[in-house]
Amino acid sequence: MDAVTSLAPSSPARALAREVLIRGPISRADLASRLNLSVASLTRLSKPLLDAGVLRESDEAAAAAIGRPVRPLEISPDAHRFVGIKLTGDSAAAVATNLKADVVGSSERALPSHDVADVVGAIVEAVTDLGPVHRFSGMGVSIGGKVGTESEVLRAPFLNWRDVPLAALLHERTGLPVVVENDVVALTIAEQWFGAGRGEKDFAVLTIGAGVGYGLVINDAVIAPPDAGLGLVGHYPLDPSGPRCVEGHRGCSSGVLTIGSICSQFAAATGEQRSYAEILGLAAEGHPVAGAVVQGAGTALGLLVAAVANLTMVELIVLSGEGMDLADVAAASLQESIDYHRDPEAAPIRLSRQPSDFAQWARGAAAVAIQRTILGTLH
Image (tube, rainbow, N blue to C red; front, side, top):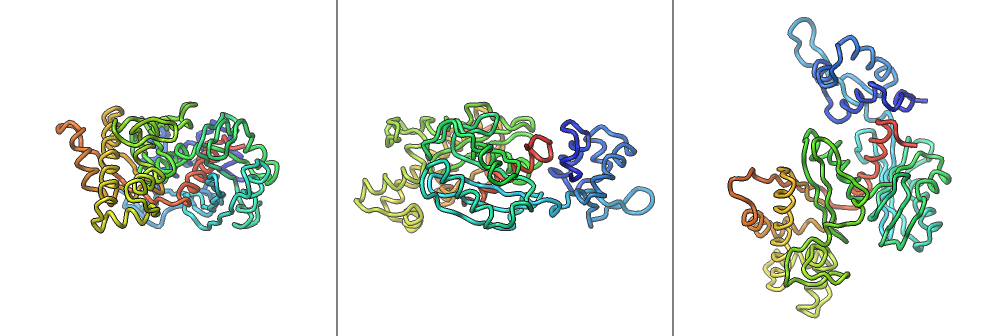
């Protein structure tokens, strides 16, 4: 049993490991202050983690007021390996990461069907593509849908699933501790611990892809109530004269912003079937129809960004998802719309564009497994 998993769930050493993971390299003095510990207590708590190789002293020595330079503490990234899975209606995309959620390997397996046994089999194959299962400390799976407190999939529209005990099935096949989480919640956790939200008390995440997703962190806490997996922001009204979504809502975010919606709008106007990337490329080159569709979507995205900022009062919004290249092509329309819907005296909104492929979604799943391991709640 390693130095992290042997700790009690409420152990002060877990709080120490969490702070170093999120904020490291961090000096012992700053760490003691943040945790309200004496230097002696900090030394006692950190020693077993240092001895086990979970923590290490950074090579970046800092000058001390008296005596020799002191070395900040940081996580030893290779102390553990984790696997993350992004599950879609078509495939299981997998990544292997270290303890700092750096991706060190990837694989992907197509789903032969949506049958639960077939999907579990594809996930196991994707994991074993990355190496022997026993080398991993835990597995995270992210899915577009609603997930229960026992990591069971309560609802996954892309797979037509309800009440599937996915974590238990994967644990039975692999022997690994497994956590299943909504994909946007998982991505938000990854941004909080390892990404653009690191060190931020409050921020939001917006994603565009097959759907539209929204994550929120307030006062260092990820807001993830049971309804977080329902994709409620996907039907936020943006354009009363816009196209309808698959559920019949006119001009909602799913009807205006998703990859499928933009492809459908272009096809309806031109009679041509083009890929999303092709439509963005045409818009960038000045194609009138593609430009109108993409710039209109940029305006709608700006309204959504402003609405999130206005309602939550966050100043940082992370933009991600495989469809978020829209924000680059329609940058001017996006910013103009934000400015129009935002009080001029309000704090500026900081937008952070993040990588937008399925590996990043899978990394989010791994980040949840890392978080649960550090907090002692991964089983």
